[in-house]
Structures are given as C-alpha cells and as structure tokens.
Image (cartoon, rainbow, N blue to C red; front, side):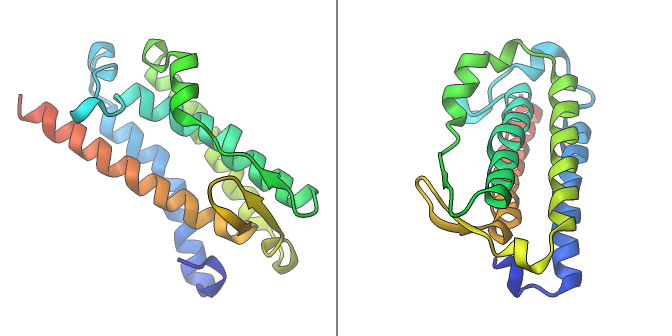
Length: 165
C-alpha cells in the first residue's frame, strides 16, 4: 500500500486504523489474569504481555526513531529493530500488561500526531532501512499497518486457542 497513492480520506482512514490498535489490545486482554497474560500463543508465539510490550518498544525504538531520523537527517541508514532480542533482554513476560498497553498507546498516538502534521515535502524524505532497502517517510504508516495486522492475527489465534481449552 503506497501512502502517497492514497487519497486524503484513505490516508486519514489508515492513520485512524493505526490509532485503533491500542484499543484492540485493551479490548482483547481486558478480562485476562496476569497468569494468562504471560501464557504464550500457539507454536510459542508471543503471549499477550509480550505483544503489548513489543509493540510499545517498536513504536518508541523503531518507528519513532525512524520518523525522527528521516525528518532530521539527509538519507539516514536505519538499523533493523530486533524485537526478539529486545523481548528476551527485557523479559516481557515479567512486566505488567496494562503498563505495556499504556506505553504503546502513548507512543503510537505521538507518532500518529507527527505523521498527520507532515507536509508534502517531509513525506518524501528518504533513507535506507536495514533488511528493507530504500524507504520514504510516507512508507512508515503502511509498514506500521502491516505489522499491526500480523499481531492482530497472532492475538486472534491466541484467543481462539484459549477458548478451545
């Protein structure tokens, strides 16, 4: 999905969908216990608390950094965000779920505010992302949406597996 190819209404819709992800997390996990929050998904996929903290850390240490660097630097090289390594180092399963959702909400809404305020010239600022190649600032919302969709699928799989027990 090319953000610049979308009309203004579809761009706004995409940013609104990104803004809804924290609500999806909250609704998906509002009734689970701390023990359930740490239970891995099928095939040892992330547990609910790992999803929340991974999304928060990616939003702060991945997307926010990329946005800032693409705005501030000429043709920056953007390192990959190693989510699996960070999850192990931070021991996400030991962290509070609600704080992860709140951290993600703050970071996501901050990034969306920046993206909404970009002018046409800023949207086409380019850099090189490790493992991806050339990207422009306008590519970030679509990358975020694709990543959210993968987490939504994993969370739905987790909920389905939980209900089948």
